[in-house]
Image (cartoon, rainbow, N blue to C red; front, side, top):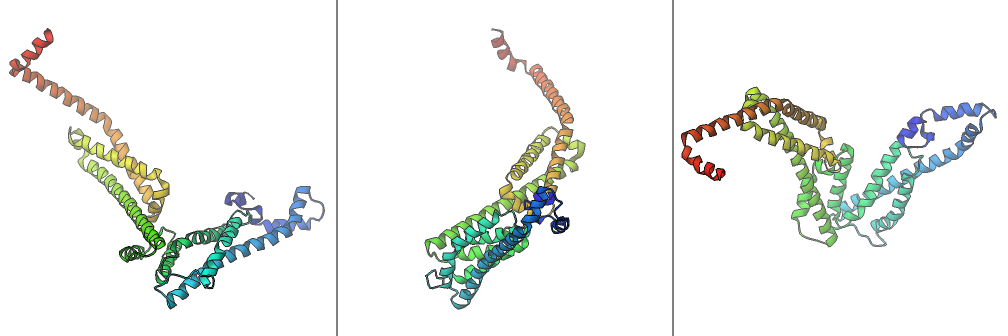
Length: 322
């Protein structure tokens, strides 16, 4: 039962539930009211379970039906969008889509849904919701787009990382302007690609800068810490990189897809940033002594300058005396 609750599904889905019900049923009528009620409800749950599974299959089959229509159109009239007239296959499919979406969303709220069926349903609903955005594409482009989405699902990643996505967007973007719906799709994917490229570059730069900061400090050793001027610049840049990573990790919605793409990347970044921050903290006492010694040296030089050139400071001292 506890496992079913963790999975967010009905106790009917708990491992061993069937065997438990069989043992309860063999106990006859000597059951507490709550357990007796569970036994009585089992046939209804079985029936409902079959209905839910069938509903998930029908939603998934409906999505697959769209793919069949696209594939056929790509063979017969690749340069034209799918027709949405009342007599066309796609037109009939599109008119049925809202009802199927409503049914899928109702099924998604059913506690009898298994985790696997929930994933299947979520993928199907995502395709159904996104379908109208691509209706203006010609059949050949639409088939290529669906292939990109299929590979992204198989690889468990954003479509940006799928082979062929960049070329697909480039081809559409460089082609002639068409309908407003087509242009809106192209603009949207161009923007999505740019945002993904920017996020990828930002993460790459932070990874590089953190590793560089740690490498420079390790290579310089204590002598580097004891130098007055290079270290503060290094510290500012190192702290900026740590802060940049903190910003990235706080924007999970945008950067999770990039972090998940490289196994171990987030852990490595966190460990490198922690090492940089720890190094700065360990260096702090030495830096305090270095800066104090530097200030004393500057004060001695100013005093020597006053001795060598008393006339430069005489006017200021007289004015101060007044």
